[in-house]
Image: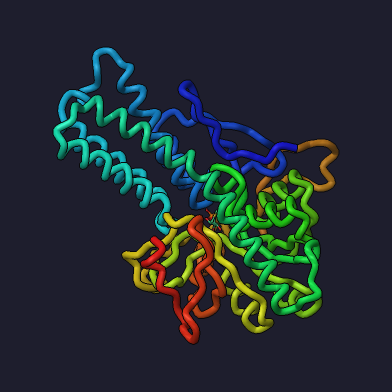
Length: 384
Ligand code: MRU
C-alpha cells in the first residue's frame, strides 16, 4: 500500500488530510487561504514540525499565485513597499500558529529573506513574487529527499554501533522504540524517526518497531499505528507508562525520535514524553537518537531552557477521540470525556526538552553528530 500523505498540492488546489479524524476516516480538506492554513496548524488538523512549515509555505505560494493571475493586480503587487509590508505581515501571522517547532519560523524567515533580497536589489514586485512562489514550493519539496538521507545515516550508524558492542548481532535483529508520529503524516514524505524505521525495514534490518501511544493527542496510537500498519512494518504499541517495563523485559537497541527544535548545545524539544523515554534509555544504556533536518537546529537558542514550550488547552487532555466500540459498522468519530467535567487543575504542555546529556546522536541530512569525548553537550554550529 502507498505511504500516507499529509499534503496534496497542485496549481489548482491545496489540500491536507484532516489528522483529527485519522485513523478512522481519511478526509481531505481544502486550504483556500492563509487563514485556513493558520487555523489548520493551530487546531492540529495538520501537525509535525516539517509538515506545518510546508503547509505555511504552500499557503503563501497559493496566495501569491492567485494575486499574480488577478486582474487588476492587487495593490500589494504594485510597488516594492506595498509588497514588503503585505508579505511581511502574512509571514508574521503564519509564524504565530504554533510556537515550539522552529521549522515554521525557519520557513517564514527564509521567505522573508527572499523578499528582502529582491527588494534590496530593486527587482520588480512581480519578479519577487515569482521568487517567493519558487522558494515556498522548495520548502515543501526538499523535505522528502533529506528524510531519506537522514534515515540511511541513522540506520547504518545504529547497526554498526550495535555490531561493535555485540558482534553476533545480525541484520534483522534490531528493535527500536519511537515516540509520537514522525512519518509521512508529519513531513512531506518518508519521515524522520519513522523514516529510519522504514529504512531498517526496507533493508531487512528491523525486527520490530515499538511506539508509545503518546497521550493526550495519541499521535502514536492513531497516526504511527496507521502508518506502520499501512507500510506493513512489524510493530507493537505500548502505553506511555510502559517504557520502563519494555526496557526491562525486551531487547531494545535504540530509542529514535524526531524534534521540534534543537538548541545549539543539542538540548532537544520534542513531543511530551520524549524526556521520560530518554531518562529510562540512559538507565538501561540504550542509545537515544534524535533525527531531524538541519532546519530544526536553532543556533539562536543556546540551550533548552530558552525553547518556548506550547501549552495546549486543558480540555484536550480530558478528552479522547475515536469511534464507538463495538461499533456495528459505524465509523463517525466521537469524543469521550474521561475526567470529571469542569476539572480545574490540568497541566498540558505539548512538548518537553531532553537534555543533550541524555542524547547519544543527532542525525541530520549532513550526517551523524555525536558529543566530543567526555562532553555532556553537542556543538552543532559547525554542521549548520
Ligand atoms: O504536536 P505535534 O504532533 O505537532 O508534535 C510533533 C512532534 O513532536 C514530532 O516528533 C516532531 O514534530 C517531529 S515530526 C518529523
